[in-house]
Length: 508
Image (cartoon, rainbow, N blue to C red; front, top):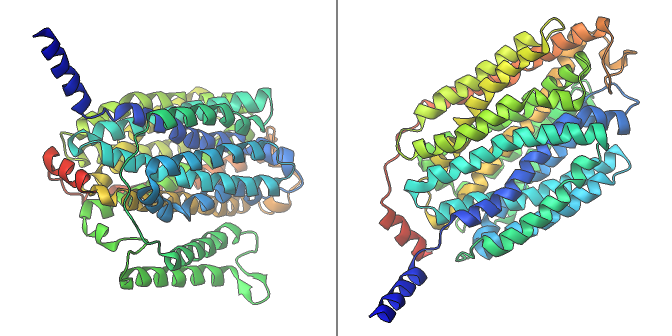
């Protein structure tokens, strides 16, 4: 009798569905590394400029360290999501993690700013292979009524990265040099690779035809638009070479983007972007929301870090410590928000979350002057952390909740492309706006004797410099309000029975 009972228990254990949580934790390590890498570079920008580009006072050059990464990240996301469906999210994730880790080594060894920018682009390619797979695995392994908690962990990862990235960046830049912000990725990448190899499940694949015409059109459109925005100030919004002007590039990019959308609508075989996904109102609005979030998070860090380090004379480590309340609040509250999201309307979290982030940026702007005590910067940092808990996980869950398993890769690719395009445009736009505000507050700033490369600025320059940066940070605040208006139009999602979701997953 005992033997029969033991056999029955063993049989039950063997047929019991495998818990998706260990695999998610393994994927989170790689996702964490991508986010840490972005925040580390934001803190290290002044040091990188001082080491590799000390001759010029134009801030656009060093901004390309971020923009090149984001551009190479954004362009392939649509197809890497489909690659995960075709060859398995685990396989594509592991290849991307290997590329990212090796590119990190090359970044740290870069002898020039140009070489660093090139290897950052390779890093972006690796990140593009990894990111859609994290969301696709969540969509395919967690039933809809548990997905909020999983996306809560996804959101908490971003909060912890906000803490570890700036702190590690500050400590490494101050103690060992800017190169080590990239070298630190190597051991993390190796550990993440081994754990993902062991713990991430192999999911069923689904054949896809790859729309290479769509890939080319989307890449050309994005490059033209972003390059035009990024380099507009450098060329005074005029001629770049020959008959080609900055505005000509931007307009050409918009035209090609329109052609891409038309081609996607007319494609009879599998389109790169299945436009039918946008018939889901919540998917469409969540994509608008995440674009504004990507724009805001990427663009706000540049004027903030420059004013704290150059205007107030803090070291990278001291500047990073001011972000600790943000990271702790986001890391602690994101899992709680995720569990709550499984039982409530997403607007209950998204509206206050986006509003708090916008408000924190306005408060930062008011505090960015030479008279504000340094400790006061902790207040908007905490407010922003609370707001972050109410936007990352809820937006991702809202976007993916109604996706069928066979569309998980495509949906994740579109969502992350939208987020990254927002980040690219934010990086480009903030560089233009910062330079414009510098010229307005410090006439002839590009030719001024005062250097913006590193160290505290003299008081006669620091005051107008801080004023320019406080004006620049209002741009992401305004964009965040656009996202706030968008999420007001979300609908409360209709619960999908777990049995229906399991049947759809098995059908794949």
